[in-house]
Length: 255
Image (cartoon, rainbow, N blue to C red; front, side, top):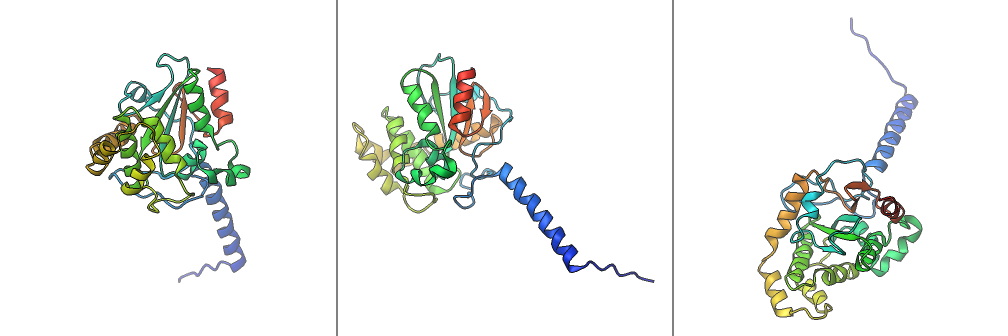
């Protein structure tokens, strides 16, 4: 004899709501703020998408980054007592907020106040010689992420990485990805604002993907070192911290 188990509709709905609530809570602790859509795979690697860098406690070999300035450009004294590392993607909306450069960042001040300008403030401290700041140019949000990272490296060939870094983030026109803003043609326009940059050499470098191998190597080395591919992600003296200026500054002061 078979038995039929019936579940009342209200019980089913209540159970479903509980499950959805649990999933929502989990997502808040494991993923980003939700400004933009899902990250797309660009380099053939497995990516976790954009988040706030809040997954602390991870183990990674930061020496791979600190000892390789060709792939991971830095500002500030190489022997500084404090080293801040940022892993970022030029297309990542939260990385744009962290840079503090784009005009639209102010629109999110009430939501993400401590995130906005966090990387920019670390960059300023490095420029004044107080710390060492290292940028890891990940490219996992699509073709334009790769284009932007290549552009930064093409500028680096002329000693202008940080000027191009700032120009790329300043040119961000909103919390969206792969809109054409960082097409190669547009990046050449952006580069025109970088003083002292040989525009012809820059264009040749970008058009012919002369630094594509570097961009791919950054991803490979970051993953092999044990870093989670999520952005923006901050480390202070080998310890991961929350992606907020409050957390970064506290770690710097405690070092």
